[in-house]
Image 1 (tube, one colour):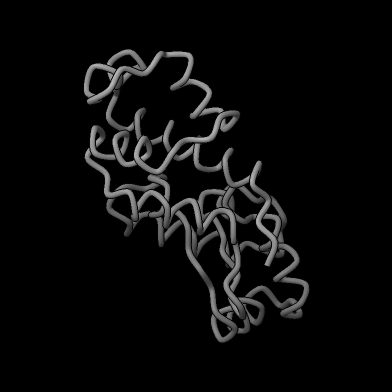
Image 2 (cartoon, one colour; image 1 turned 45 degrees about the vertical axis):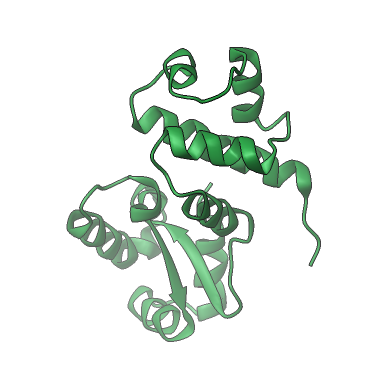
Length: 159
């Protein structure tokens, strides 16, 4: 397996930014909660993924935002390595927004699933991983071959 370091860094930065925004903090406010002095420009480059963050710095950022570092890295991992063998990850919000008429049963399922999620659209709550039996059943509902459904779903993977 080859890891695209730049892509990984961008995803990590995006997750750091999401985490900060969920707390309702500006970078300046985050900075006040950190143990060490970090310039706002450095925080910005971490969030943009243009600067690598040391493990210790990453832990410091996570602690300040009350997030376990392993949980943050798990989110990054899921986004970078979108598919586990035999599974397809999809973003339910993207499924709901998909206009293809043949996916109407899938849209209805996604809408229902989002309604049952505690915080619709809250990152991992809107992402699901589908195994082959689920994909086969959904393909049947949409009257599509499984391969064609998977092709549609790959376009709806989490961003």
